[in-house]
Image 1 (cartoon, helix red, strand yellow):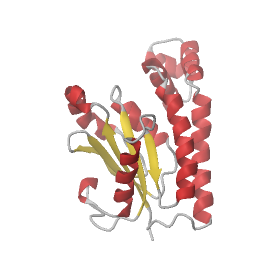
Image 2: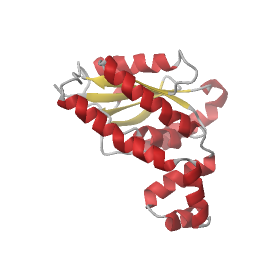
Image 3: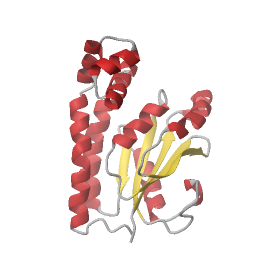
Image 4: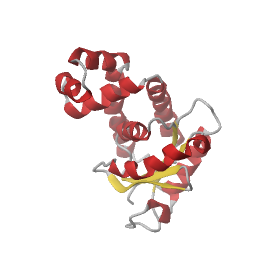
Length: 211
């Protein structure tokens, strides 16, 4: 039984930012990842969705999504499970199955608590509690990032070098290092590295059922 991850997000306060939302609709297609089954696309005006093969291996993809959508702020629901119809379509909005229902449930849960920005519904309450606690801490750190820190982290990650990142950003390498340190990049990186180990442990114990 093959498991998929559905990511469903909505734009916070979208009605006041209609022009920005419209601009992001085309730009978002530039966000690629080897695990993506479908690209991130908008629907219903302010909702974004994509399908990922398997259980989401790292919240790094969520971080990239948030970066591509700046200055828009997102709530993101994550659902694990099967896809029962529409699989193979280019557009995730024509698909259906438990993974979509769980992503929708997770997104609805973020709207019940003003501090929540990301939520997982996997079908296993124990896994949900563990991962959602991790995601809450992850999001708290990122919520404090300035635009300069976002650029510093993302460009440094892409280049792997403070010097090259500085050249791309037009700043001194020390400035890039300072941005990454202030953003607590090392904590984010360790969290992303730990994420797949948690899921692997649950998968090995057959606790991710993918219903």
